[in-house]
Length: 230
Image: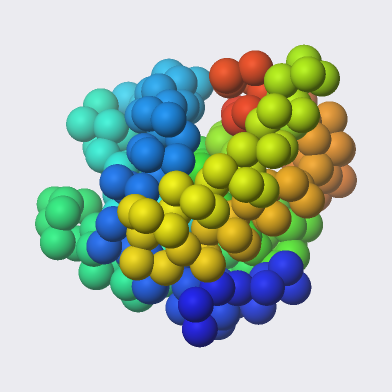
């Protein structure tokens, strides 16, 4: 299995990420033109981690999103359903408590976390509403959700350029830097099919979250949505 299809079969998606795990962070930096680290810093600032917070970091991959949360003193569980990603994460960051978890059926108790976050992973779930509902279930009353995901650039001319980059340049760059460039064709297709900022906010509200807001990064290439459990 070199890539997943847009039906997002969980086994296919997991196998696809298994295949790109070793160079995942490096290739992401190349494809984002160096913006990935800035997006993660902005997300960490919105999360505002501190000592005593218990945080679930879903689709954590190799733990690059979890590391700054732990560094701030939070009790963070990096979770992913790709064995390849978990293995790469445990090798790179053995001090983090990597856990295998399916976002559609989380192996955690009700109300266990102060905050649940997911970066660049929600669009890879087969059922967005179920994933959001599971995140709500494991969050404490008054706790928060932070979703960092690719979105829709707000400036129309830039949006056209960006779409062309996704469908043309991104696969070309991936073919020269990734062991599995076909996986990045899926990446481009999944980004293009993903709902815009307002539509995702509506889905988060429909799943039972309250007070949904978002912040655009890089002109809306990425948006960070925030909500809380009422």
